[in-house]
Image 1 (tube, rainbow, N blue to C red):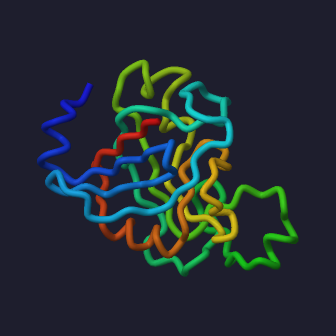
Image 2 (image 1 turned 90 degrees about the vertical axis):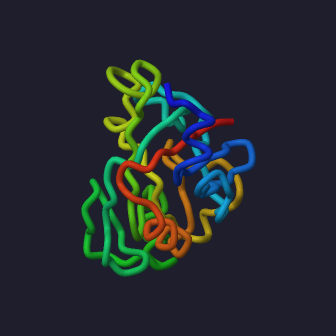
Length: 169
């Protein structure tokens, strides 16, 4: 378990509040930026297959999509060659759009969000871009943390692999 006070006072980390649907970037104990987000429609939970957003301490295990154009479509963490437009969205209304960049999360609390059936990494939980029209301020994702693509580019350039992420209600 992370030492909450030490981490919160001395490092850059992301705080994801499900109740307020806000992601806050902290540096040296100070809030430096906030972004609206959308977490899971199914609420909080750690089990594989639940389509819930996992709680607790995580870290950014990979940054994917550097230098890709705005609204690049990803499937399986790979760019498809498509650029999202509202027309493409209408053509594929059931698609879970992963756009622009991906911050792939890994749990760091054994048996809470790491290892076995609760492993955040193997649940493929990301902070990822989505179409602006899907950012309604309501929990509507399939477990990931959605954020507007332009906000994600700014966030992506602010954080590094290894930075901690705390997800809570």
